[in-house]
Length: 356
Image 1 (cartoon, rainbow, N blue to C red):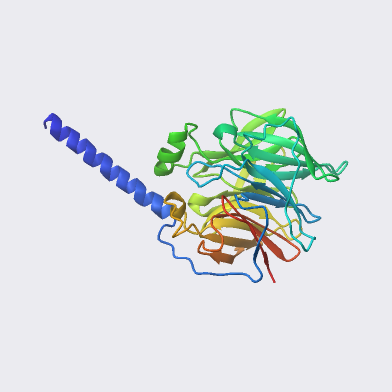
Image 2 (image 1 turned 90 degrees about the vertical axis):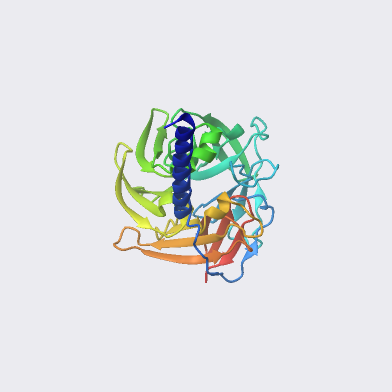
């Protein structure tokens, strides 16, 4: 075989490999899925949240925290800096309020992603953990919430070589947490272009405390949302590219042991847990290919999945809400309180609907 023939053979082989990888990515992204509308009554857009509401978490008294303004590779974003809002779910006005940030904090590079709240049982101090991506790096910001003037006091920035591509976080102490790394590569071009095509289960979950940092679970295609059961015995990790929620048992040394996985039939993002019932609520992407090939005329849809009795066999998995993107694009989180459902998005608005 001549040199030209060899080059042609290599090009043909690479083309076949690329074609197979694209077909695989389309399959994992549910590219052929057609969504049937399933709306809830009395849905209204929340004010001040026009540039995403990527993660939402709600305290037991109905106070919600919302991260906004995420800039994530490959997704639409604005020039507006990242912010944290609070929302009193018991107030019928349902008006999000921007939290005052400390003067000693770099607001210009603030790029908030997943969030988690920990209430110290010894004195009821509320700590807010925020995944931050300044210049697309990964670190965790620890704040103390001051309710009297709706402000945040910055306590410290947490960085570690194992926290290299953090997506979401769940706090388990005043300075300890579990976090998901959603990528394996750290270079931007490899993360955005190469890794999705390779589609290998290389991502993981990390436990962090000041005295110990370690990988505690791995083998995920895209470790995304993470949360904990009300009794603190189990963690839930969402992997959108295998369309599952993984149930993990937490050991005394903070290691995690896989219990089972629950199929959700969608590319789910963040997961919130009802503190009373233990039910899981997930904001999902019904057709992830529309995020890869973003087209405002055929937008990325939204879906909310509700899981009841997740530790039973089988659990009850229900689609609660579905929209083709013309009401709300790219739902990333769903959280409930008092018969109302908050749905947040990666880069679009947030809405509140009546569940009953």
